[in-house]
Length: 306
Image 1 (cartoon, rainbow, N blue to C red):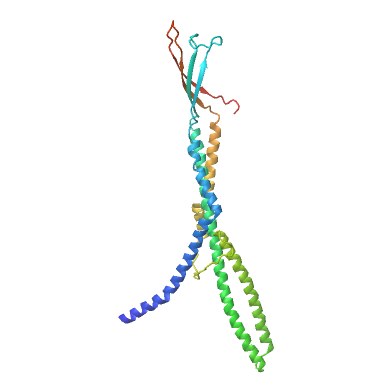
Image 2: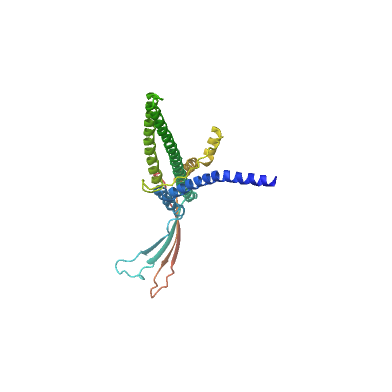
């Protein structure tokens, strides 16, 4: 019993392993093409750089404006230009800061972050599109190569059949109609081979272009197409698409961005503030010691042109 089991296992492994090996090579080749296309596609590179640029914007729009440092000369008499002649003459330094109305900065940051998300989802959707195009070209090329191989086999069989019918006809054991039919079928098959080879060149050029290679670059295509069961219903496909497609996530981010934009437009009606501190230094004269001045202020803009 044991020798029989060992023999059966060995037979099964030799029978199955070539199939599994072909399928693995087929998938590995496809994955290599996909990775190559994703790594070399210039449009994808541009989208990636745009994401990096947009990531720099949220910290900028959510930051306060730069503070303002101001120097003044106040009440300087024009007859002598002396700093100690008049008691109100002073040298003043002022530091002020603009403060937007509460909520404006967070809304601007939210809008900028949504732009990053939108760009990222555009990038992801472009990746899926490139992957889909590579798969379509790859499977189409596999089909064309298999069709060419089968057509060449049929061509050999037809040529043998024509030789046999011509031989039979020459010795009077066949009819000319069989010879003509076989030659017509061979002509059709040759035309089909011409069309298939044109399709092969087209798909190879498309696949090479997706990988940013010369259109006529040589390609090594592995055989191993395997039929798989497709048991999804339409409602299941819609649900999966809504959950996973980046384009739907992009639309949701657009909604959030426009909602934040509307809220920001409404808040623009409210004034911004500017607060500041100033220090005024006065010069003493021989008859009087003069104290320096300190001041503070708060100002708001009046949005009458809103």
